[in-house]
Amino acid sequence: TFKQLYNQLNIHNIQLFCSDYWKSYLEVIPKSKHMTSKAQTFTIEGYNSLIRHFTARFRRKSKCYSKSEKMIENTLNLLFAKWNGTLNYVF
Image (tube, rainbow, N blue to C red):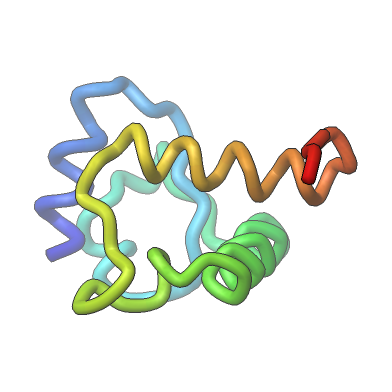
């Protein structure tokens, strides 16, 4: 599964991949483009956890799931605006 994802990403000429020490990453990503460390991944995992906590559409695919990329983008924009204190709403 990761090999398929890597092949899809590879067309974008990504210069550096940061990951943990999972064996599949080590087998697929070339060493010259791969940095293995938890130091670069814990912040991203924290944000992913908060996104899943506050938005139902990222928890399960069986319910509350939108296939529309625009709706996912809008959801994230609203969530980030709320976090940043830039969301203005009127009741």
